[in-house]
Length: 307
Image (cartoon, rainbow, N blue to C red; front, side, top):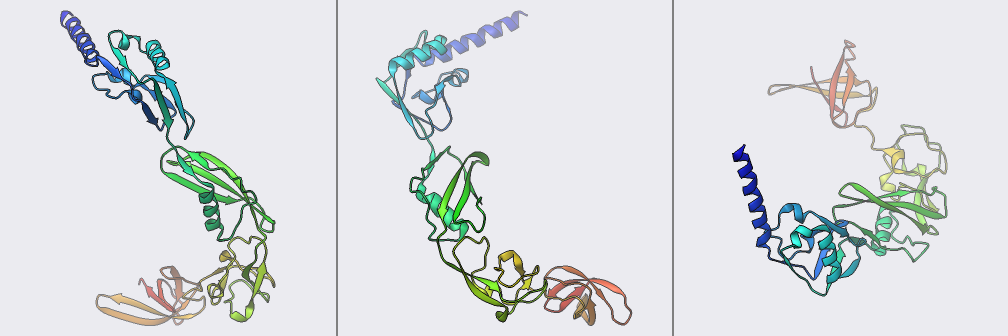
């Protein structure tokens, strides 16, 4: 019991000594913080010798993001006297007449916002309806920006929602409006195109639009030779999700099937029972025995069977 009491006395003595090391507390003339609170550790020129428990004491709120505020040395002394009387009891305070407190931030300017929307929508000459788009002030950290279209595809005004995340935490969002009185050349089908049809140059024609058509294909070479993923009607604009690359193997098509056994390669002809893309496993049938096997598509009209 006596030993525990002595240990407490020693601990108290060391604590008092650690405080006395900082006989003069020197306050910075300019303080920058990224958080929303000001702590003792933020304002000291040299925090050495001050116990961590004191350094983590909250003094007052930080300024708004990207803003500064000036406090007098008298005000700082009052705050310290109120919140840390034990620290100032035998300690002098050295402080400039005025201390500037600044909360750091990252700023996304109007020009950056407009540029991001242009890039996302694929329209380099997109112009905002208003020139009074304010800059967005955000906390420091890893920034991620998401852009989502809110207006309908045939609207004369493009409205987008721009959401901001810092360190994967949602911070805020803004809605922006843009003019859509623009001319763009896209492509539409001229004839009825059933699902699964390979599109040829004769089936499509240029079409000029004056409104936003999300994902519309603007190069015909990105359409010709592709396969329709759904029925396309005459005049319908072709979008990126309306066509896909044709399969390397077509259903009911005779394909070359190979099997490797060590250094030996055996080749035969099988019938594909389904369409197949590169690397895809499909079912095949032997036309003689009607036995079904599985194989991996490795090229145009070519598969490698497992057994």
